[in-house]
Amino acid sequence: MKKVFTLFAFFALFALFTPKYAQADFNEDYQKYVQSYDTYRQAHSKYLTSRSQYLQYRTLTAQNEALAAVKNVLVARDQVLIDYLQLLTYKTSEESDKNTLAAYTSLLNQHREQIPQVGSLDDAVELSRSVEVLILPMNNLYRHILATLAYKQVDVLGLRLGNLETEASTLVSTLRAQNKDVSTLERWLLDARNKRTLVDSKLNQANVYASIVGTNNDKENALGTMTTTLFQSLQYMRETLAYYHELGESIKYGNY
Image (cartoon, rainbow, N blue to C red; front, side, top):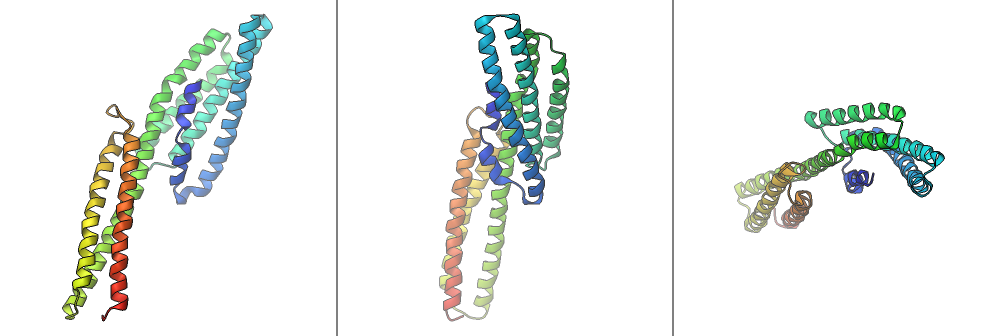
């Protein structure tokens, strides 16, 4: 049962990247997830108590109570996973990911329908394993979706920075054509371009890491490395913007 918590380990970070266009629907489904997660935690707590009593007394009553508790926690676990997979659909635009999420949801629904027919603790354990084997691939899919979304959002900022460079370059060229002294402006523009080269380099590295997160090639912490690389890219973006700020100030207060 503890494996289920692995799937939620990065959820706080993941929530930072909520697409705005689906915010209302996401908030509603997120509340459903919070409620189902709370239900799961309560069911799991009762299961641990019933299990302890059964192992201690080994009576038929204790066994029946343990079986009921197991069935409740299995239902609750399936529901919280289903609700979580629904949240993940808001985080990806890739059809392959959506199809995989739908397939996992279908398997969990089928599993949940089998739980009421469980007649023994051994059967419950066996049925539980059919979901436990899905935890790792579901977690890998989650990591893949997170990595892809994080990279794309930072990459968009990189594209906007490129547009800003084009506009600044055009403006400097226009002033040069007017016989203005643009030597200072060209210096700021060159510094900004050099810094943006570092931005592009970090984004390219992050894209490589993002492509292997959650795959069989993800032998090390590719997600963590990608996140660090993206933060480095963002820092270079800030430094690039600082140069453009100086360029703008020079135009504002210069003889142009």
